[in-house]
Image (cartoon, rainbow, N blue to C red; front, top):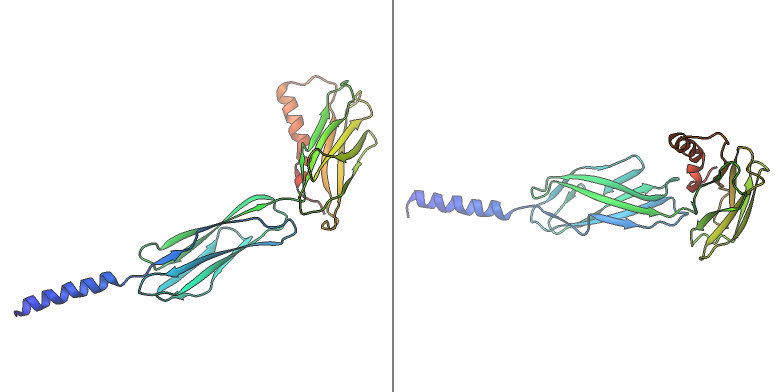
Length: 249
């Protein structure tokens, strides 16, 4: 057998060996949906992986998309057949609604060196209001208008206490048409003068730690306003009430 032929066999065998030796991380899931309780401080996601290749995989970096989220891996190196996970912790703070956070992972996996993991947390607040502002035109009949308050079903809220910042408005609370729902009936004493009030709403719940919420009521000025002016007024009025879905300390 010639020397050149033996060399050729050696090269082919080496190429086959190199081709068969590879690292590959297989992820159980790259996106996690969480539904933390209204009293939870954190939402924690676990992203599990396994090295299905036959050489080790090394983690180069693990970075969260914002300062409110941290992420870490169990091992810097994952051997063949070894399993592990990356844990992502989202600090909820006062955030509500749908929060999406990502974690970018860099490895030396030649098949997929960069992977983006997604944590989605749907946070239901203690109370949600619709609308957060009720208003009357100048001279309009001073009939009551309704603000609907929907309570978190786990909060065990039995009643709401509502107080107006001025005596120009009264507020009455009744049970709503659905479970965990309240109807706040707001009525001006008259609509002959412009007046604004903040409605402070306090839920009676064992889960509430003294947080209060707010909405707003307004009798509009008598001077005629263009559509753009009225839009600006409504935007300005809505600004202090826009935090109604978030508790004030």
